Image 1 (cartoon, rainbow, N blue to C red):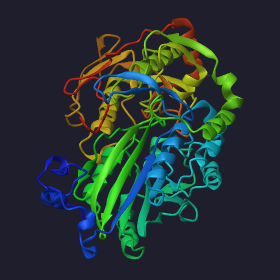
Image 2 (image 1 turned 60 degrees about the vertical axis):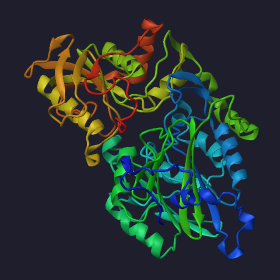
Image 3 (image 1 turned 180 degrees about the vertical axis):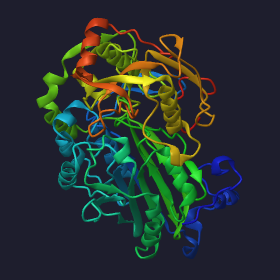
Image 4 (image 1 turned 45 degrees about the vertical axis):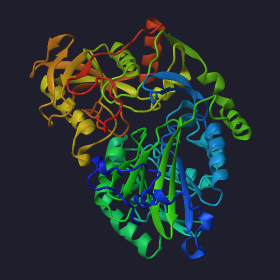
Length: 543
C-alpha cells in the first residue's frame, strides 16, 4: 500500500497531522462542498480498519498500581486489568463492528505468582473472554516448556501465529506463519514473528525442542501474503523489541504496520520509516493500543494512533470478565496476599539503567550470599509497589522465576568485560547487537558509564565497596542459577571460579531481607550512573 509522507521530515514523520493526508490539505478550500453534493462517481470508497492490541501483560489479570508520566510528572494510580481491557475492546468494536481486529502480542502466561503456580491456566478463561482474533507467542511463553506451550495454544480460542518457531525434530512450524483476516471486504495479512534469541535470553531448558529462525524469512512471507494471499494491508506482529522492530521497518518492503512488543515501550507517537508505522503499547494490561487505518479507493490514505491509558475512574470494567478473573484468582488469594515486608517509598522498575526495586533485590542477594558483590537480572516486568505493605504477590511479580543462589569468584577484568557487554546489549546503535532486557543490577559494585560510546569504552571508575576495581584481584559474587546453564555461569557471566550452589533461593533471600530491613527507604540507588543520558531515562530506544 502507498502512503503520502514527507521523506525529508525528521524520523520519516509526516509533515502534516496523522489525521490529514496531503490530498486532504489541498481540498480544504472546498470545505463548503459537502459529500452529498459530490457526483456519485467521485464519492470515495472509504473503509476503516481498527487494530486494537495489548502486549506483555505478564500474568496481570486485575487492577493494580501503575506509574504514568504522560502528563510530564510521575504519578502512581490504580489501572489495568483484563476486565478493563474487555470493556475498552467492547467500545472499540462498537465504533467499528465489522472492521476491528483484536490482538495479543505475547508474554501473557508468565510474570506473576498465580500464573506460574498454574502454568498459565489462570489466564485461559479471562483471555478467551476478550474474544481476540489472534495472538503471538512472546519470549516468555516457553517458560513451562514446549509441551505446555502447545497445550496453552490449544486451549486459547484465538489462533497463535509465529512464522519462526519450528519443531526441532520435524522442522515443521509450530504455528501458522500468518493469517489473512477479512474485514470490510479488505484482506489484511497478519504475520507473526517472535524473538529468535529465546534460547539464549531465557534459561536454555525452557525452549528445548524448539528451533527459532531469523528475520531473513520475513520478506518472502510478506511477498507471499501480498501476491498469493492478495492482501490489501500487511501487518507484522513482532515480539522482538522496539529498536529491532524499527530496524525491520527500514529493511522490509510492503509492510504497512509493525506492531511491536517485548520492550514495554509506550509510543505516544508512531515511529515512521518510509511507508511503515511502528507502535508499541506498554505492558501489564495498563495500556491498549488502537491504530486506525483508512483505505479510500483501494489506497491507504491516512492512519491514526492512540495509546490508551487504562486508568481506573476513566475506563470502566466489564462486570462479567471481572467475575471470571475473581474466580480464576480465588485459589491463590490467601497465599499471595501474605505480607512479607513494607516500604516507605514507592519501589519500581521502568528504567534500563538502575531502579529502586532492583537495588532492593540485589541487596537481598548480597546479604544471603555473604559476598562482596551481588547481581540481580535486568528484568523489565512488574508494576510499581506503592508505599505500604509488600506481599508475596509483589515478590512473585518481580521474581517470577525462583532460582537457587550461586556464589563464586570473578576477577576485576571479568567484571569490566561483563558489564561492557551488558551495556552493549542495552545501548548498542546496531540493533543486531541488542539483546535481552536491561542492565544487570549490582549491589556492592558501582560504576559510571557513557551510553553512547562503543563497547569497551563506556565504563569509567568501576569500584567494589568504594575501592577501585583491580584487574587481577578475585572478588566474591552472588547471583541466581539459570536452569540449563553450566555451573560456572552466574547471571550470564561465564567461567566463574569456585562456584557453590546455595540451599537458599532468591525468594527466601528477599523474604529474610525484608523481615530485617522493613520499612524499605530505597530511593535512586546511584550505583550505575550514566554520564551522557538522564539517570532516570525510561527507554533504551528514544535516548
